[in-house]
Length: 83
Image (tube, rainbow, N blue to C red; front, top):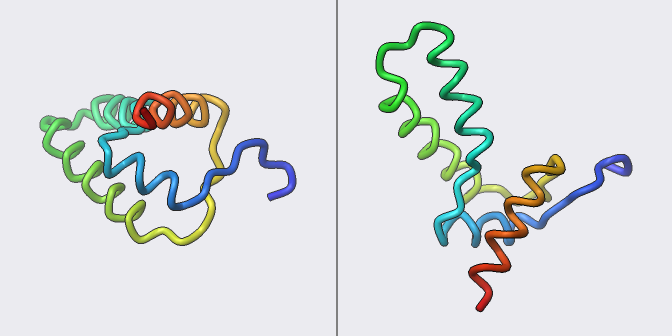
């Protein structure tokens, strides 16, 4: 993990998700992949993907390594909701 530039605590991620944070880039990439594979009901599958991801977040007890874009989006969300 020494080469990872952005690490967030599981608590920070969990609180953000409980307050409505969505990993928009991850969700878009997943939906694009499904559509590219010819999936006929991508929106229904995306609901399942997102709910599964929220469950993973809720149970996570380890720090989250984030890419630059994900780090920026979570920081913007957290700052907006701190006040």
